Image 1 (cartoon, one colour):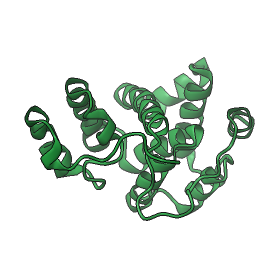
Image 2: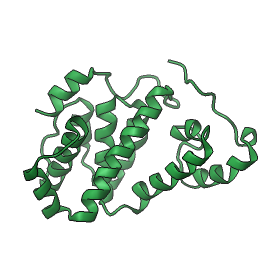
Image 3: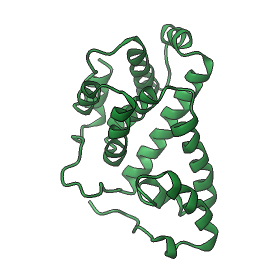
Length: 196
């Protein structure tokens, strides 16, 4: 699989894009790669996406381990190799138990989740695969997380679905990696396994 956009160096960027590139370089472990390489081809949209991603990654009301868990859920659902590669170590450093990430990588409902992890899993899976959540799950989310965290979690799920699509459509490769971290699984099988 060949990346569909060549990675441009900072010097190759148009002058009007360089202030955004400067901001990206302050926070991105991938430099100007990953989703940013594609996003910068639409500079105004890239700026708006960057600001949203900055909030969702660093300023959200959702605790960091749960936030990263939600991102990994989107990566698994979409077979988004780069997204998983980039976010699994962040999730583990933030406190997500390794066994939860390992089960999810295998496209299995994670075992031994606490009440809040279970809620985030169920909420994100229902929202992503069914595009809605039932009343009981909504009420539980409101009780455990509260209004702001629920809204942040919804927007995070939608935004990282977009990031997954962007990475997959532009075929972003994994740096210095031979084997992809995720087995590519059909959408039907993902749905059967993760909604179980």
